[in-house]
Image 1 (spheres, helix red, strand yellow):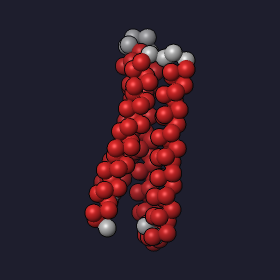
Image 2: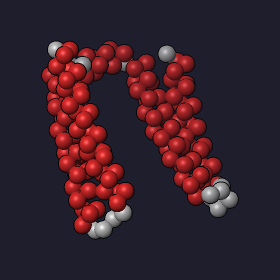
Image 3: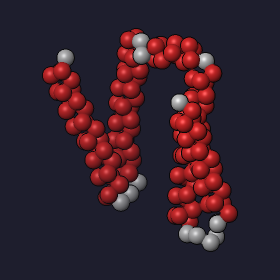
Image 4: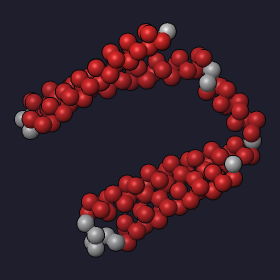
Length: 138
């Protein structure tokens, strides 16, 4: 347990170091490399630090952590979470389609419109495939 906690802390520190290197080398490295270093660094920092804090919480109060885990896996909470994910997927799907229409209205390059329509179609096909799969399982 302690080994993982230290690993996550090291990831968070590495993320800060990468972001600092990006700032220190500004002007000496291409902008895309600096942006990549900053993005990867902040991603590592966020992931590592949040996991580190969760592990520390678990080490300090294992009963509370078990209680939170049981509550997160409760049938009602799982159903609520899945329903919220489904609705947010629908909203995102139609937002992407609206973006395709807006890109047509503003005369954006064709690849932008086709990319938006492609994402819409991919989500629709994936949705049907998952429905068929889950119907067979249940």
